[in-house]
Length: 366
Length: 256
Ligand code: SF4
Image (cartoon, rainbow over the protein chains, first blue to last red):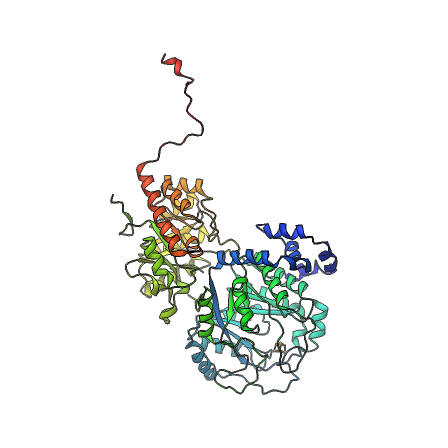
């Protein structure tokens, strides 16, 4: 079983032709439908559907309030290590970039954890670059054990693991996985990942499934927007989320739509993804998966995030920092520049001001 | 008229139970509870943050209410049991609403796991109120293993679609000796009134209030509707007819 099989159905699919055949009447009918199939979702990602963003927004808002209420879940990322053996051309941490490499010791993890926990947040997402030597699974497990003292939910955004390794981390207290495929188009993937284990497209693509089989509670998938045509990438991200939800019914599935940000190395996005494009993607996904989570990170600027609250977002990061140990050490270099610099209190104030409640705790392992 | 619902040895005068998820602010909860007159309030233990009073949802439930923690987030009986024990250890009392859901697409309850959790927790002295898909045999089993009430869904959680399972709930009301509390799906006060007229012991409402334009006013509407429905049920609604009674009866000649 693999999502790869689903992707292959679209190997020679002509997106241009499909989009040409989408009609206004078709889009209206789809918006009115109770349940959308995958072609309906694709139609809502078409250029023509740009004329219907308001109608889509109204429905997306209603569906989100109905299923999630007027709440936004808050979490924050913590970078444990920036050692990386890969050469992703779009990333500041890639092996050839010269920056100070670091990894936090358990004591340093504890120091950062205390600073974050003082804000009231109970959900944390830990990140590392890919280096099995510098940040092996055992290291990540040790960090999780420290973090469990301060947080009720620990998610990981690390290199893809084997199923038994996921099981090991889950046993240590990890309950969520974020795994960006970065780019679903296999050829473009090969170009953008010239060296390192990340070149293995299938191993990465199948990672969420391995984690689900190992018993993780939440998975978050996504494509890094700016690397390839966003409409097809958004489509495959949605299909991936849908596939996971169908096959692992007890897992909470969500997507992220990260857009490329400036970083050390200065790779220019190949494709511009405008605010309007991003909004269309989120709305289409909400209509396609009414109960799917949508995570919006601090890569996006504050003003846009404020609007996305009412356009389907369900989870947001707050008080973010993309540097290793960056909360206690102001000098470090981050993976990319964040855009929304607000701290947790400021985020909470914003949410209250637009009639939403920030939720700091939504799970604990019992 | 004194009309008391008794569950787990507690006397309850309001037959509207309230859920606390989905509100735009925890600060609305006390006002909503007051406006509705509800006495039983459910909170998801997954959201209870004992370390952080300001955002701790349980802290907003008025002290004179019965706090009914629920096991939302539990995917199987084992998780539900652990959540229940933790709730009791955290001082949330011994009422527990069992919610076991292993389907994130529709959020339908897993009846089989629910029975297992109910059996374990009832034996441990909890007052167990299981949320379930309305099925007579499952309800019987739940009663047998010690549930204090049975909570069938009217429609999927959060759907506001009303009493879609009406015929099945009617059967539970007729056949099960425990209180039947309609949980999930009720979207309007009129639907709550209908459930009460049918003979439900209580209804639990959350989304319909939390996502209303004015949650406090909607809460009061639900309070009134539940009372109206209950009074109508006690009054014994007249027979309903599918056709007008003929003024020249077919068997009239027998008496002529
Ligand atoms: S994206 Fe991840 S794997 Fe690629 S270079 Fe950056 S840190 Fe390494």
